[in-house]
Amino acid sequence: MAFEIYVDETNESPVIQLKDGSAGCNVEIYSFGALLNAFCITTPGKKVNVIDGFLSPQDAKENITNGFKSAKLSPFVCRMEKGEYQLEGVTHKIKKHYLGAEAIHGLLFDAAFTIKEYGTDGQCAFVKLNYVYAKKEEGFPFSFSVEILYKLSSNYSLDITTSVTNTGEKEMPLSDGWHPYFKLGESVNDLQMKINSNTMLEFDNRLLPSGNYINYNSYETMQPLNDTFLDNSFLLKNHDVPACILKNTEAGLELTITADPSYPYLQIYTPGHRKSIAVENLSSAPDAFNNGIGLIKIKPGQSYNFKTTYRLSLV
Image (cartoon, rainbow, N blue to C red; front, side):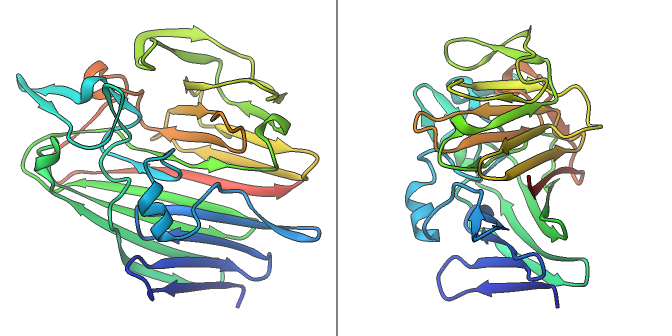
């Protein structure tokens, strides 16, 4: 059988392996945070993991807030000004993780997901992970469930679909996204990059959107990244072509990131160590609970789906 799945439940947090034996491809997922910890392709002479991940689930638990590698961003993404937002005239304050004065990266990055279902067939290997949120003490007085489907198909293709359902009795604000870091070589300076955007959100000095947009077409065509620093959000032009393509010609690798219309924004961050690059699919702009840019309002019993596809290839 080409596709296989292995679940290691020897530790408190299960680890799932999806494998395509015929292609020499495997994906590693932690139930802790539903983190994507490895996405491997076989190159001439060796297997390469393009995800900047963790050494173990315990390492992830201890260090997830140091960069938020592969974190699920929900029910808000990126930064929220002072960790505060208003609903029906009432001010709520997030009681989770802060960077400076701002709350960041949602409430699920350290959630203990459970394995709902997994399996294989001739076309793919998949796993569904589930988490039910009801922690009103964290400043988000809503109940919701999250189901994340990872599906590995042929040609080094990985689909990740998130389904969020409002299980409470009130309309709920929602933004969703991912925070993976990719490494296609020793340094991101060796990458070429193309993004399907010519529009950048203007940020203030706290990396919060001003509400204005800036023309930015430096990577509308494939260009070397070199020493460019980015910590910015881009509005995608459409969803007819990939949102982002990363290529390292010397390493012989290319990663294509395709988002469906549920993810109209793309955040790109190049950390100071320059060993990997964060490319984040987002349903809204940062601080959407306050500025309303792309904010979803989900009714009781309603579900929203969000999908990203990563595809690797040899070049």
